[in-house]
Image (cartoon, rainbow, N blue to C red; front, side, top):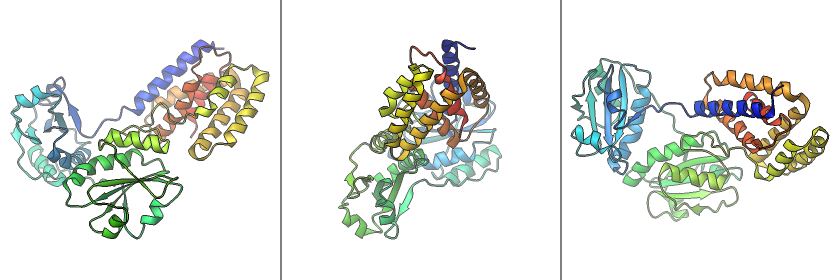
Length: 382
């Protein structure tokens, strides 16, 4: 039988590996730095590189097109679609004569002598240019939007749903600020796409002026938040970077996402159960049943996603009582085998959420193997 110390160390190592895998998926557009530029460009594949500045409005408008280009060429091994932040990596941009943003340059295979791209800044035009230069035949992949489009026909149905927290952008198609916000807003929607209680939506306020007037919209973009508890709505006055929106949604909706839609280490943790979980872990076999009964009573008081997480707390606690040390050892080994395999985003979200519960049980004194039972079970059950 493994000691509690050994069991804990193995469980933590397995979780660290899982967290690495959950965050290891590469972006479609490769971000280059002063250190990595010449390791990636001018080698055994050609490269299209966008030199940009984060504050540049033209760069922001190009971003969704360029990301779509990157997604389309992701599986084309002979071509790299990349970008360089010139605010952070000035020496690289200076070396290649960049004086305005965005500047897009083509680097043939094996060459650091670029050719400047002078065409239209659309995914289709960029793809046509790359296909000619590289001799490829890649077509632009369509990217489904995660933003819910509102109109007078569905506005009330979506926004006034008391089971949903809804963020709404009132925009105008001709508005420059709206165009700059669009790729960021799309990323916000994608980040929370798997949280069914959260809706990221927009409405063309120029087309549906009555809706804009009803909600006091006088400038674009205007963002309003309609939480479950306040369908009168409240103004969103926060920042307009991805991290600002993510922090706002997490705080208001009780979600735990980062900007890429990955679950954070706090996902699934129910603070009100902390003390009982700790008591359960430290209890002997006879005391566990009594603590488990109290845990059941507390879980019955939970609602929404917390109730679902609470049910898993109970399931794991019950297995911890029933199956003992051998179960823990076997589950850790199975967990390690699973982590060697790739998983879909939805599956990784599930694994990450289950892992979060386990952080509560990283206690200095553990007499029984409940910690590792939870770690193994949370990873392996869907």
